[in-house]
Length: 107
Image (tube, rainbow, N blue to C red; front, side, top):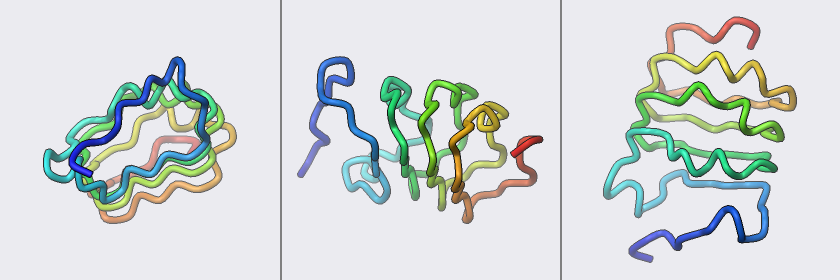
């Protein structure tokens, strides 16, 4: 597949898991910032953004209230947004292979 298929998050059926790890399409043009359209998937339970050279995440994770598993391994993150503590259902946060100095208070 040369390109990711376009998904209309407003009209397509909801899904609970999104794994973009090691996605060839994204690796050819590295994902350096968080794709804002993911925030439209309100019932998303598992999100994997491993190995994309992410340098920053937006402080809007409260928009993903159903998130239970977040995979951020192998990026270039130095901090995590404070809004992660708003994720009441978050059970697993995988973030090794980054340059994190500390975690948000309350996480």
